[in-house]
Length: 297
Image (cartoon, rainbow, N blue to C red; front, top):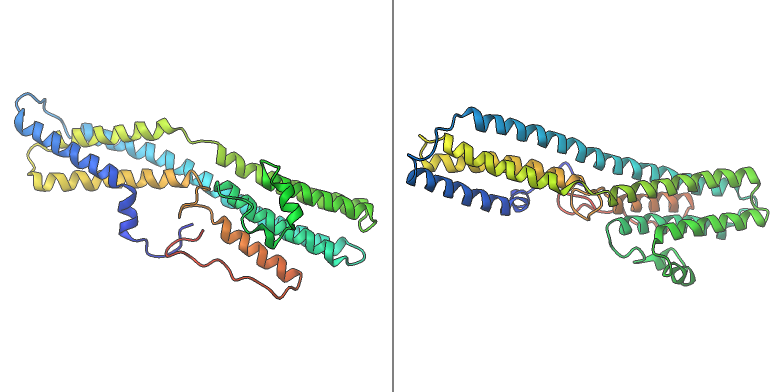
């Protein structure tokens, strides 16, 4: 997730360097054709590239809105995960009759493990990395048999809550409340997985790029009386803005790809860990995740 800091120009240009090279080549080719076969080319009114530029702006605006909606939905989901994770631990401490600290700590640590495992799974990383801090070796071995590790961890939570009920530590109404919290966590996981697996149409990006290239060609032909040393920078600067907006939208539409534009799932999971450990009055409290230059993962 980008922070309110200065973003290096090198990072910005690196995102569109290939497109810039293509634009430079296209501009040079069109300029050469204009000079070589000027008599054969039709007169290009400036209104045509102006109309195409307006169309590109509308399409980019639509894509930016849709991409931001996906990114914002992901952030809202993880906000719900923060609330429900805290709620689960608070409920457990409040409901368990005999202050079974071992079982309360087990549920709390399993919830921390679920948050990290979900974030890493969404980013296509190893979801069980460093899980020995929160889960036993037997539990980790059991998780190895499951394709969906976060779902398996939630199932472990449900099993522990069932054991508390069977031992008389919970009554039925308290069990129902804990089950409702687990249900909300499961729903949040499903929503994240839906965003992850629902692909934004790839043809939209290709058509948009073709339209930008066509816009550059028509604008170059219409600027027949402008010197090349002014024409080329103008074409590059205008098309660069279009490509930067398109690239920003492309990155925002996939908020779980381990990029600077991602939802900061690792930092959020660390916040949940800090909150839960403080509720348990533990002494070993980790520090919040520090930003990497201008973004937070």
